[in-house]
Image (cartoon, rainbow, N blue to C red):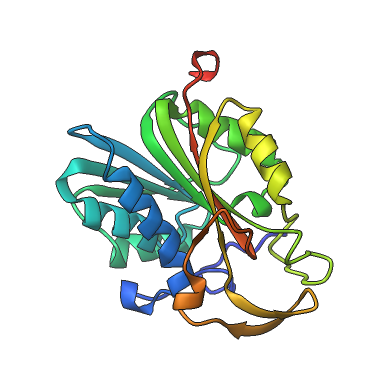
Length: 229
């Protein structure tokens, strides 16, 4: 049985952004900087598996009045935490346990960081997410890299699978998305394919373009009318 509790050990529980680990924030910083370049007066963003809401807060705060951000998560405790610590007038949090149904062509951008590996039916989750993106909308997604941090060598009770870089791209592009760019990110010290559990410095956790890391972060765009919803 899955543990959706707030303090399961899988969630960031800092009450301010200063208390959130940098590797998690770096992904949202990248997303925010990219979304800022979209030339629209108003944008709708969905943060899938938002956790305690810090990422949605970063997006809503850094992009200010140009966006409305929605955060959904399968933990009621996490959503309560988000509503207590990470609310803004342009942010809305909601409890949704997958499988859920999302509105069709509703969002200009969706972020889904460190989520696919938690879901048994990852294809269904991806299809629901992609259905909900507007034509030409963006998808930001990250996955643990099986080639560098094998799940067999580095067991994680919360993860069902890790993804090879090539397979992650194929899985998503086959569902109607074009890959725009990708980045690798390292977080832990590793020796011979095994994590030592020690965190790297913030600088070492920065995203590196076109270089595979322990985690890979992808930016896709929905442009095919065939998959517009």
